[in-house]
Image (cartoon, rainbow, N blue to C red; front, side):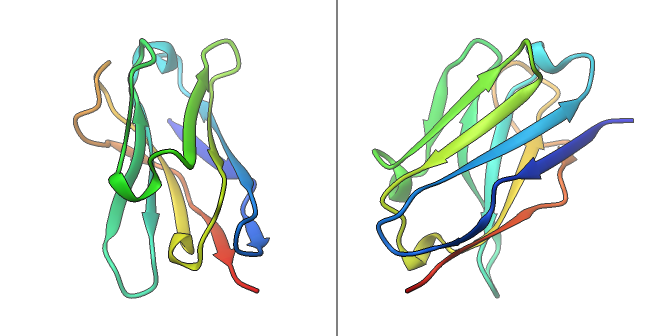
Length: 119
């Protein structure tokens, strides 16, 4: 059974930073693409960033230059460093796993971690 467990969410002021981490209990982690999604209140869940098994990254336009996704295959973790946060970054952040090496679509989800950007 695959488990994805997120951590690192919380309340931060505008302009601040947070680092989210996702621990994956899956034997195929090193050959799976991983992603981070965000769901704001009343809105759909959107892909924020993805990273392929070989380290290629993609970001949605609104977070480019501010967010960085990274992975540690030795630890089975994928992180999302978020800088220069704005209230529009508020939402529940979900870690997701793709079965393939390059990101296509998620097949497994974490339970989510709340990020609130507010003064």
